[in-house]
Image (cartoon, rainbow, N blue to C red):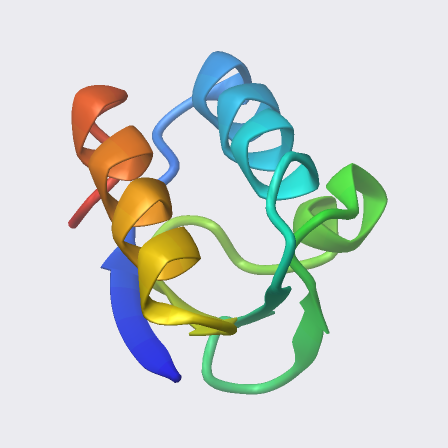
Length: 79
């Protein structure tokens, strides 16, 4: 499991974040410090407070986690 701070600044980044997560073969849990949601659900993400960085917990094998981190970095999602 890996805890990654992510900052979603606009709608485009939220959509990209969900697209990346949907391609994963691992579990993605997201928390704003109060609630946890599925990181593959755009509706769930919109329920979070996105003004501050959120915590993304990737649960899966190291190869998938590493690819996901690279995709987050390439799309400027890491806080």
